Length: 524
Image 1: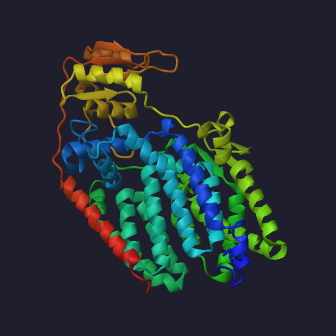
Image 2 (image 1 turned 120 degrees about the horizontal axis):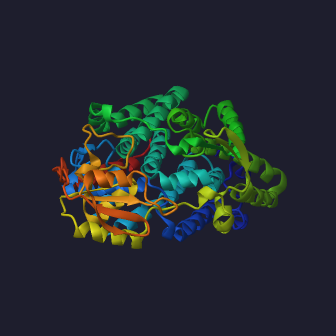
């Protein structure tokens, strides 16, 4: 319990006759089911963001190679580039692909359930360290944040690694060193940067909480050692990697009332000298301020503040329950839920234009219930257009061999076309990782695809390229021009798998078995 033995203060609930009205686990399940339903209704609009197409491309590369490779030969072909991205998400997607699911179904599945997994784990982890009421409030606040929900959908690997990180911190709190180390290892094998952020959080918690110092530091070191093979390889190719100033960094949003409640929650945590895990989590995520500020303030970095805010709200609800009974608590619940799900304001800073503004009603439930009036970024977008791509893919297959390459002025769409046509591409989709060898991407390709601008006009760079390479027009669609290079300069150079697919799945099975054993073991 959080505040002594009083069930109202602790959020454990009322006597049995009152639990029908106020049952916090039931309310939590209601939120999960409601938002799960809304996510399923979004299925035709998914995937929402471009990153998933990079992951699909890597998955397809693993499939073609017969397992894990250290050289991404399917992009920037024929030379390729180092495959620095951790492989776990791609291996999981590969399992679905081997089971017969299509590219689009896999992308939609991971986008659809990514947000739900995050919400469920936030509730689960909060419930292990606080009361059922505080866990419900943490779930409510997380589900209300439009920016956090969008981040969980669009940043699939980042989100999955974050979820593993939450389990890592839970393992530390239970002094289950082996389980925590295994979870941290999964973080690194899913998203290296998130792995380091979680590592920092664990190390910092060892400094803040003496009772968990040994468990924190042993777990952090153990996870780092488990990830050593991949980290050594990434270090050897570090000259090919650099952070990029993504467009997402232009908008920074502050969920004001969550932050205000978090301040009160932090004061309570330090006063009672317990419940410091969220503080460690926030401090560990702070490097995002330099690399991805929006992810710290309004994305996954917000979760630490949500945990603290839920503790503050839990204290308020406890006092209301003591003074006014379950009726007062019920009214407060309706008001708080309505405010955060429908109306709470967000402060937005546009760093590019130097402007500030307040946005009211930019909440998840408000967007779901009135989509025609939802904020612009809640609508999402896609670059997958089945009918258009089908015509282009037919042209690619008809006028190129399987070992010949394609190029597109829009790399993410080029990656989709390459997957559907079963071809390699001379362009790439992950700007952070550069190829070691630069080649003539247009000259190496057999098929070149230029997408029209918003006015259905040809890109300015297309006519000079057509003349330079003596390209032949194969077809023009409503969206694109498809050309053939009569003298392509290269073909695809596939790589042999370093770790066969069967071995990858075996490693996953062994890791899962160890996790099951470690989680089942009693806390020391």
